[in-house]
Each structure stands twice: as C-alpha cells, then as structure tokens.
Image (cartoon, rainbow, N blue to C red):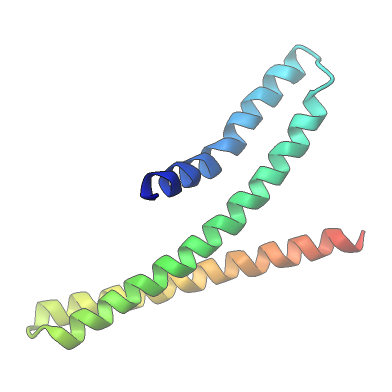
Length: 114
C-alpha cells in the first residue's frame, strides 16, 4: 500500500512534465493531438497543485505535532529548541499549503464564472 501511494505521488509530480514534453514533440511535428495534450497538461497541473497543497497541510501538522511531542517528553535545551523549530516550521508549512489551496480554489472558481 505504501509503495502504491509513493508511486501515485511521483506520478502526479512527473506527469505534467512528461505531458509537456509530448506536447512539444507533437507541436514540432505539427500533429493535431498537440492541443489536446496541452489541455491534459493543464488538468494534470491542477491535480498537482491540489495534491501538493494537501500534502503540505498534512505534513506541516505532523511536523508541528512532532515538535510539541519533543517539547513535552524530553528535557534539555537542545531538544526543546529543536521541538520549537519543528513547531514553527510545521505551522509555516501548513500555512503555505493552505495558501496554495486557497489560490487553487479561487483560480478554479474564476474559470467557472466564464
């Protein structure tokens, strides 16, 4: 199951680039499929943005939780500081993922109106 999830995440990350390469080749040879490949690439990029935003949100929350766990369960200045850094980095990553998700939602709703 874990390898399937990993495969899907890699495929989502790489698929738009591969589609762009196919589009460049199809456009170079003036094939009619080039326009459809460009539309597929846009759809894959939207999926990539949505997936990346949720991974950043969940990863940030997990890092923050790990940081809180470090702070509460271990003594020592170094471990407390490393926990605090993890909490801050996790919150920043969650915020960044939420921003990407919000921009994707506004982008999607802007194209629904037209």
